[in-house]
Length: 341
Image (tube, rainbow, N blue to C red):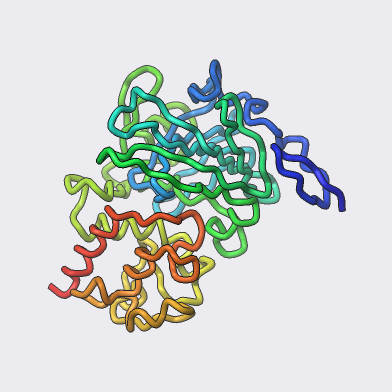
């Protein structure tokens, strides 16, 4: 056992880090020009999700880098099985003022998911105050952030960057660490690329040799945008929000499978979805409601209690959230109210 310095954190570590793990984000060469501008080099491809995971109102810019000459195969149901050597690059930031994007942003964290021969590994990189680079912090960190929201309110937060082990808490499926977002349904939407053309992401991946086996788009599932009624009805938008925020754990092969509450998109059994289901393994939270979901009564549904809580012993998700996502709470309450109609 010895100690290494990563970023500015002095932590014990039992073995050497692989040589492929860079201390500085800039050393990977993902971006050209000023690093904080996040302008990708050739081979680093931006992507977005129709409905992303909520992370304390942080906004995200995502990229993927496939190993040269390799493709991923289409999967209609689950996250794609990316080839060994794939790197997913997720950048978390807060705008200076949400009302005026031209005022810029402050990057807080870049999280890499690297697919190695032994499985996926998560590496958290913390951006310095000068916004010139991000440094590997395997022990995680808390960064003080502030921004002005869309209503002109000053917001402040001790943003928590998870350590390498905490990342596994959400990304484990079965006994393997897995990505959460990039599935066919989440990627089935348009994005503007460097040629300023807006194109469906799956078609772009197919055209550029990143994806094989893609059927006609009419046969591909499409996740709605949770807060855009034009993309799906109330049930579809509530279900996709629960899927991306809760379903990676609350599924038969997820870390929360002992709860018997399965919130992933493929669950069709209403009892397993929580309707009139008594909570199991809910700890202190169980005292607040008799059912995970009581149709017509969102304020008597444990799911709402969990999502409205900030107490670490009650709130859900346990990691990655300190603030209450008020907008999604409103959506879920409307959904639960209509479940008995």
